[in-house]
Image (cartoon, rainbow, N blue to C red; front, side):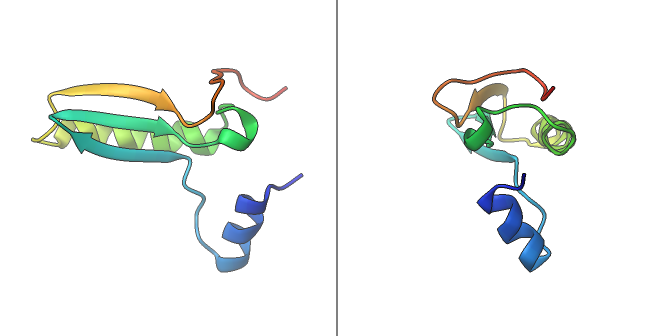
Length: 80
C-alpha cells in the first residue's frame, strides 16, 4: 500500500527522498526520513544512504558523520 508521500512522488515523477543530508559545525548529519514506517529499511533508503555516506566522505566541510532517524522510535528492521 503506497503512502501519501509515495503517491505524490509517483504522480509528479519525482523520486522519494528517504535520506536528508546537512552539515552543521563540521558534522554531516544523515537523517533516515521514513517516519511513516518508523525508518524501516527498504532498497531506496539503502541506496540513498550509500550516496549520502559517499557525499559525506567527499565533503570538505564534514569531519564526522552522525546518523539519525526522523521517526520518534527508530528501527533498523527490514519489512517482512
